[in-house]
Image 1: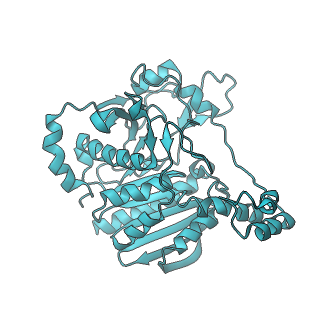
Image 2: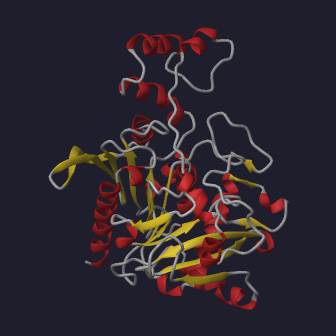
Image 3: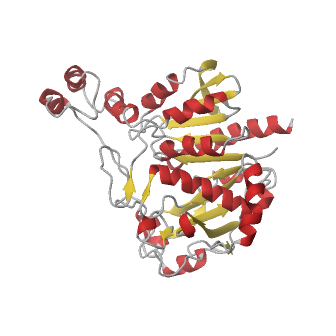
Length: 406
């Protein structure tokens, strides 16, 4: 099987051999907080993208623990280590193996994207500014150059994966690199900034977070439109009630900002002063205007989803059914707009004889989409329901890999 970038890569390979690329990569055998040698192959490094490679994107690459030569290559999701919570001394954060890491069955590149997140950095103030469309370009450039640096993975199936706001980005990246062998996987995706944000009020009502009176008042006064409101509709504004979900990731901030961790990961000195789990200067929030660092210039990725319907493409969309950030009913609404044929009707799926969620599959010509919910899963579904998440992803990936082998 050939991956979608193979023809383009061959055209560019001579050019890149002639350039002095600012790429670096290092093997990491030990990490502070983890006892002994890492029982998996971890590589970290930087790939330069953009004009004169002034943007340096940091990545973690973990080889599949099963069969890295044959297993799929994913760009990017949950990792093989968990933070051990409940330590008395927070300055000594401990790591432990995640028994449900997706790296059990897939090679995964975790990329700090866009610039300004994680350990990725810009060499100039101009290149520190990014946007939705520029993130698409940077992701495309990254995977192309990464594969040039790692040619042994050229024949592995390639899947572009992500969570949350990456639902705006991923379909555009897939459309750009597609030639018939790609698939993509998105968890709790933001796809359309009206549909997904608008679904929060209905979700809150269905979850018994607001009572009938409040919901019926909002529904009547707002006409079913709860976002991007008419500021003169005071009855609607007075009716709306919102419930927000927040999480605190204290341990990751402590761990990633220690000198020993930065040395172990081979972070370039003087590039990122303080690692933050969330960079609020570029974090996308409902109704947030562009900042000096970031432009939110893609409102919906629905058009890109529709473009992929004519391709030989596979998609997996997962929702935690307790996620209020981008609720499942918003996802189901935009999937309905794709006008796909139902292949398998809504039915439960199981983990160890227990209902783990529900799924439905769709198709159109050579395009296929599997939509699945994970019972009681929140926004970071792989943290809330690690075993169920791994089972769903592993089953879906293996079904595709096995069909290719046959």
